Length: 385
Ligand SMILES: [Zn+2]
Image (tube, rainbow, N blue to C red; front, side):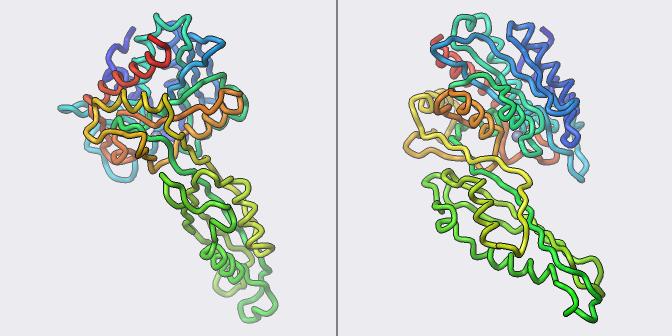
């Protein structure tokens, strides 16, 4: 086997340029698939578009208990405008750090899951097992995970660990995310005769006023979550009009909303559309549902597995959720739809959340090694080893 240590596997993965867009996860997915196949996993590839490949690798499996899922995304974000001091694809190391785009978010998390799973593979054949779901295009609307869930390509899993960067602290969920575009239309005319036209920007002003006074409680029935806090709405961009001497006949606005459990995105879109009436037309751009798992016995065992490595100990009496959204929400939705029960989900991985998407992104090698130990313990306990 070419990749033996978690650090070496992380460096091998960093060498693949999976910047999204365009993504092109295929080569990296096949590299991971081959590694897992050689270790005895059944491997399937699913591309939502040519070269946009996710890989699912499963070992073990029993009727009475489904496998545990570990998931990570293969794609990485662009390098940004600032110059890097390190080669983003070389996996340079210095002291306790390994550098590169995706070192924190989240090729280190993939490497840790894969190493732990391969180590346990010989013992998993007649056990509930482990399924690794390594996705394409998380960074652009969770496209790979959505495809797997919607096309019913996921098999079974009883719990999910999302190995996104959390400094090895286990989080029990995140807010949902939904982006919408609203367009108002009018009728153009010469600016000197505005009464001949219908001004799309003036209509948009009324839309903005309605959104500014949007009442979550009244429209969605929920305006707070005990752990996540309040849903948010940000009017993010606005464009309208083409030239100063015409009445504008179109204006567009985009809105970012972060939602909490209990808010249904379909209902939310309908509520906003009925609020603005025929002033404008709403179109959904992307969405990820909110993700939350009430601490149960399994989550308690994950907290116990990570606690020895943490200064701030996780507690089921005071569970925490993370700021960013993940593939976990769509994957959980897919497994729940397949009849896998509640599918408790934890976000837990070796990267540092504050370094994600940054110039000269890096990961602690110590954290990486510790996450392998945590993942191995979680996999062992799920499988009664
Ligand atoms: Zn990520």
